[in-house]
Image 1: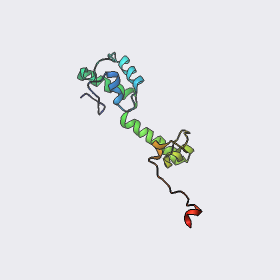
Image 2: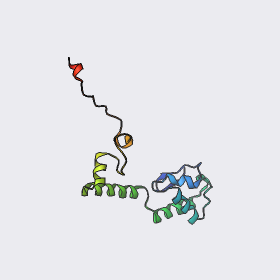
Image 3: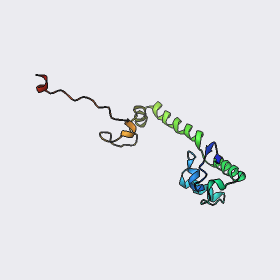
Amino acid sequence: MPRVIGVDIPPNKRLEVALTYIYGVGRTTASKICKELNLDPGMRARDLNEDQLTVVANHIQKNFSVEGQLRRQVTASINRLRDIGSYRGLRHRRGLPVRGQRTRTNARTRKGPRKTVAGKKSVKGMK
């Protein structure tokens, strides 16, 4: 398995797709990397030799913030929003959708599984 910036990229996938396994590299960025380094985006990741892997790793580290550095940036941004008490920060703190989605229904990804609350007992049931 080829290893780039501490990430094992799948050997049987096209280089353009295999690079997307690195956090912070999407399809567009992977295409740019292949074009700038004159690598065939259709070649398999296993066909890269050691020199090419080194060139790819150095290019990515020099020109993009990826993996641990990017994760720290995202976490720092969210913590800043929480600390200044912005609306978005409060939504992050409460684990609710941040970007204006409705929460009366849906929003299960952020809120987690449903927690059923018992309904009010009727007067008829009391007798």
